[in-house]
Image (cartoon, rainbow, N blue to C red; front, side, top):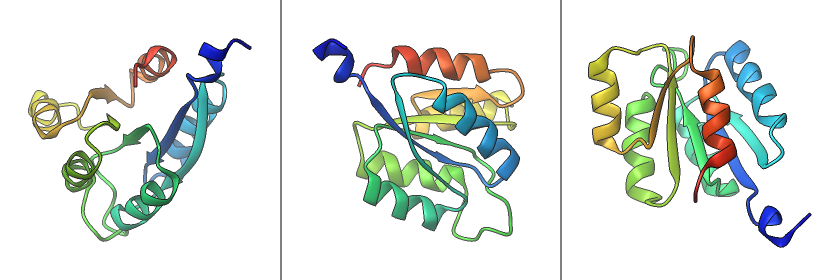
Length: 132
């Protein structure tokens, strides 16, 4: 392994309330050689704690985090993360794909916006080539 490839390990946290989707994303991440998966949070408070302790390079988050998980939604988390971690890459992965959601997320500081139903391959490609 060259020194350059050793320096390109990307640490990733996911924020997803659906265990099925979280497991699908995790299985995608662990297959990528340059990714170190640090964990999944299911709510905003859990995400803030995980991100604060693990210091990921990238956070992949959903907009909708479910009513059973109080503490806000992915948009609230996006705003907080962009304020606190200006260099962190923030990737939205959601089923809420209306153009208004895309515009809102990008305006609030998301670096990427992907559709859960159609863009899993794009997530993988971006992570393989991401510049930190």
